[in-house]
Image (cartoon, rainbow, N blue to C red):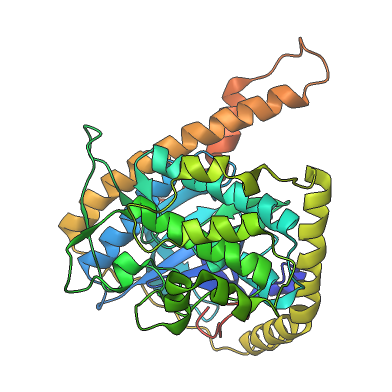
Length: 427
């Protein structure tokens, strides 16, 4: 993902709610695309997840969108991607004048790409470097689980980096694992959940055999696939189904399993192998817990200091950038050159959301935006204090509030409101 933007791109960019220039597609999900965007006023870069609303959009898709936004808006953790603002009834104007109705939410931009890209396009990770990444991932998962949320789609494509900090993203499959009283909620086994190569056997083999599963343990299994992949630069298996020869070998003959992969990395420690085996345990009741993961001997090993860790992330990201930059730049130039000659059309924006459901959803979205506004105001306040040269310097809290509100207020709100990018012809 290249973040370099030529100034003339902005003259031919699509515009979202008269607030953001939409530059490029940087990710594709089940029901939405993630776009690289630029704030029209302050020119800051963001990632915006956009779901188009058309006659085929059913209420279930909108409910999934609201579920994802509702969960993500609750999170305040360094290892969880931060959401800034959301809208269910946005206006997306393409460069030729076409208008689309969209739902979207604005996120901080993780400007050092995906773990998937670093794994695919750079050299092998050392155990020390892998430990630094894995420990951050465990912190993020622990934060979610402590708040009764399970991710259910932990994979290398959903692990991002910004200034050397891991950011867990994409909460489209996330769910509450406890109810309002704190009691455990039984979650049903679903055929289309998560990603097959990261799903545990209780999901892969359970269709038609069992109804419920333990989602926290499933997240832990997925983290084990991540850990193996970092040190071996290969997935441990294609799927955890009983029919997969590699996962079957891991269950039946662990020594032979590691011998199969030793040509990829012959210097793996026994402690690393032991932790991976415990993470990928077939029986979810016997699988290692997060608390046990943190206390495992391998986790007590050395980790690079923060400056060195950040430098390695940056160096690897630059390798990815150098490999992809020419291709992405050419594609963008071609796209924006073609846009210069598009015939402009005028049209009104259609409304494909049922009025009753739209009104109900607007109430939910407005409540979320109020919460996000308060968080932004709090952050602006503390940033202001930290920047003061003199401890007694005065500040205007009303001015801070107005600046924050004008910068993030969505229009129309009642309160406040793997490695190669895909074809972006519909941007």
